[in-house]
Image 1 (cartoon, one colour):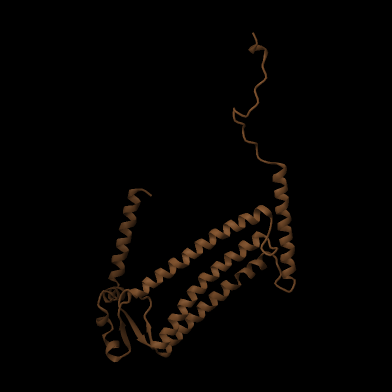
Image 2 (image 1 turned 90 degrees about the horizontal axis):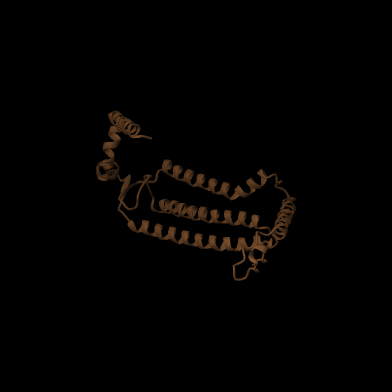
Length: 241
């Protein structure tokens, strides 16, 4: 993209922003977002339908600590996993008889499960706190800044219940994702599944041993001997007087 194209795109973006601000409703919403919370929700605050929750930066600090701890544990487990898998692939061994492919498959989804479980716990704790306090913050909100929270009404309760239900459905789908992938790989999800997995595992290990056998028969080119260890070249006629 050359300079002229960038100038044109920038101009179009500015023109679009100006056009949107000329729309009365959007302009009013933009102006309201710049007003203090006490002015924007004065009627709700005076009627007791809403309260202002002060800023609490400690929540963000706790979230950062949790993310760092979870990321560090994830990296350490991933490093140990790679070392263990490399050993398994060198010996064609398995975890309780299973091939490394299954071990990678299971460990990957286990880590994904941990992340989703952590997120679900945070959402569940927030959901319980809202129903315990009786006030639901207006999404999106930032705990580093003061934000508005409305008193729970049947409509707001239904909204939060739907949010929790949708999150639960997504979590269940992620938990069942490995079985969906097995079904897409032509594994039947019935009582014969363990036998199918054992058969597939035996074939993978047989292929692994075959590859190792071929590597032993066709090793890489030997290293070039150094001058100190290489045998002397036979003398030719041209070297004799």
